[in-house]
Image 1 (cartoon, rainbow, N blue to C red):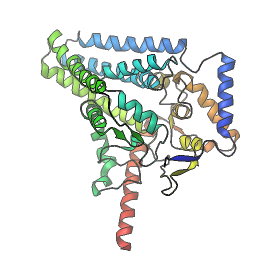
Image 2: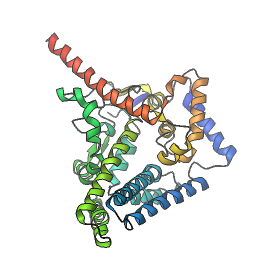
Image 3: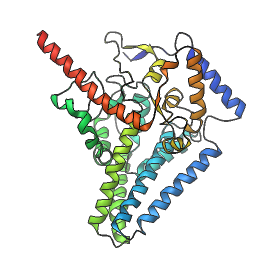
Image 4: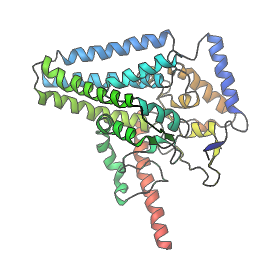
Length: 371
């Protein structure tokens, strides 16, 4: 039996209202749901940042300059991935699924990442079932980190809010050198199940990893006066800092104190909530009105709009976010919408880790006493 929500829309048809208003926004402004000239200018600016950072790597004179140049490369390609790779995976840059999907694969591949399973897991598991136990692939973290109070804990998790940031420095290294292979071998993740991985995807993944290692660790040694050790230092410093930044970016969108986690009814497989209210109540915005944040984070700082309208390009999310807030307030559920600063979200995430572990440990302790 498949899992489903009790309904798509809320009893007062808020989703229907939202869709009508958003359609009106596109009609009145003569926009499509895909990108526009502003998105093109943003793409040119972000590509220029990436090219400039790569140029800096090969023209650095000191180790400190090389480290800064690597950080520039790491951040600029990460920003491209968050903005255009993410939209490409949803097919909403141009509306041409093949072109958008290819752009997504290229942007992720440049960063050493395989996009095949990520796209499946993201669209088929996370977006449909955010924060639903056993269904959201984003809840499948390291056994050292518990995000969901439904999970089983160990005594060490009592301190996860302390050691988590130290683990986050390794996240992007794990993505590049470990997780991509694991998800292909497993062929499933939460709600996403693949019967057979095409051989071409294995070939592409291996070529991506080899090309990544050559570009980041070999080519700079061949074309500059830096030693392999110096290049390796810059490479790892880049990953450590980028790892912390991207992990908090992803986690504060769904995994903070103010969000909800649910489990489907074990007998009916029904999630006893409407799809709309679940999407909003499990997702958080940060700096939704900031032009700088929108340039950097794309659809992540206006993440509620993305989860309600994932088929729409992120360039429209600031306007859609205002529509969502207004409509919720008109229906007396304005409290569904929540937004924070990046710092507030990061602190709330760490508090969430602490409270989640203590909640589970306390439950286990009470169960032991009852026995």
